[in-house]
Amino acid sequence: MLHFIPATRSQALRFFQNALIGTAFLGCALLTSSTLHADRFVFIDETGEKKEVVGRLHGSGQGAYAIEQRDGSMEVIAQGAVIERDNTVDWTPFTTDEMVDQLTERFTPDLFRSYVDDNFVIGMVLMAPLDRTAEGPANGFLRKAAQFMNNVNNVFSSFARDMRLDTRDPDTPLVLLIFESDSDFNDYAASVTKGQGLSVSSISGFYDGMTNYLAIRMAECATFEVPLHEAIHQQVYNRGILQRLAPIPSWFNEGIATGFEANKDRIQSGPAKVHSRYAAQVSSVEQVSWEDLISQDLAFQGDVMAGDAYCLAWCLHWLLVTERPEKYTEYVKMLGEKAPLAKEDDATRTAEFVEHFGDDFQQLRQDFNLALRNAMRRQRNTREPPQKPGYLNAQRGLAEIELTALNRQDRGGLLEVQGRIRNMNPLRSLTFAVSIVTDGNTYAQWILPSVGSSRVVPLTKQYAQDQIPGTTPQPSNSFRVHIQAVLPDSPEAQQWLRGQGPDPREG
Image (cartoon, rainbow, N blue to C red; front, side, top):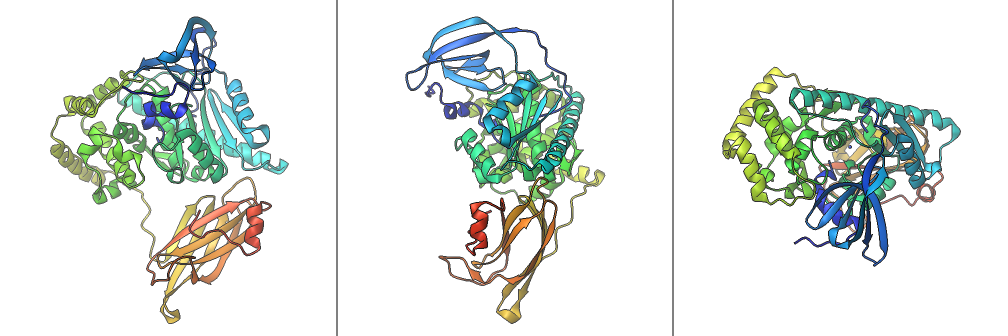
């Protein structure tokens, strides 16, 4: 028997772990304005107080009710806590204007900007109030995000048609939240996930099945890879493919989302094509087996094995889409019939997979290897070649960094580093702390005050010779880059400029 506290959201998350890490799709039809009937539940919460929630009954099971509220969020309460229920309440889903009002109130008008496209609300949570000159760039940024999400909607709809999966319009407005500040995103993610799944620092974005919101870091809008992945989760659970709070295997949940690949603001492939990064990664997968993936979700719930699990989820999903399309469609429709809050054990889940695809997992792996080799010969992949040793060109947070590093044997093996960074924040100037940390416990650090939006500044030549406190210097063969960004007039920036730089291992 599952026991939980009636109105505590962290307990409700147990019913929907698959949707926490999966990231507003645009261009869908507007919601009907007709009035519906819903339920009014009066219940006693964990403090003994009488509470009321109004919404549509989404599902019941394991001693609980799941209630969908007007904004699309879910409230899970214990059936035994309900003292009164009335199912004649007039009820209509939120309009986009009501959704904007609710989000603006939550994040405050000074720190929230929004953009509405049909039934979708794109919101930006700011790290500080904007100057008047930044309002135009902020609106343009949101408009660009909306355009990309329109593309996602079209590509997903095309895939569903190809696989003969029925879709419908979302019932409530769909929300994408973009957080300018990493610290604000971390705080929000911690409050939503309640410690479930991956650590907050490992999350770039996520779709939450309880709020129905998609949330990402602003930095992820440079490539849109994470927004694309999470947007597919939101599509799946709002277009009638799967039901929220249903016991869906994580391998399928993540497999369908990893099937779509983005290149900058362009979606270059769907689940029927080879995903270049995962195809290159599959040979190095060691910690997770196909049998584990099919039977349980544990590998997706920790930082150590999640990378292998996501890769194998793509492998299995791609194989079934390309080599078993009819069985795949039947299987997805079966998953779509799973009831919210239903309880399901590993044996049942494995049996359902075997019923559709057989029990010869070794043959599945062999079929995948052969199919991948053939597909790679036919499909031209455009992955960038690996960077040469001693050179780095990458994005870290809200900075784009170009760096060269040279091991100077004539200076006792010290690492010589230099380069440049660009402020990728389209809205404002930032103060950066850039740290190069070697595996020998030494580092070099630059403090760059008030770098303007899109401005490029140099990282003058330094030697990574400062010792990390509490460690012993050792010979080094590699290095890591950590970048922190704060507002120029913040206490942190002033402290950095006084010579008290941040911990070089953070960021």
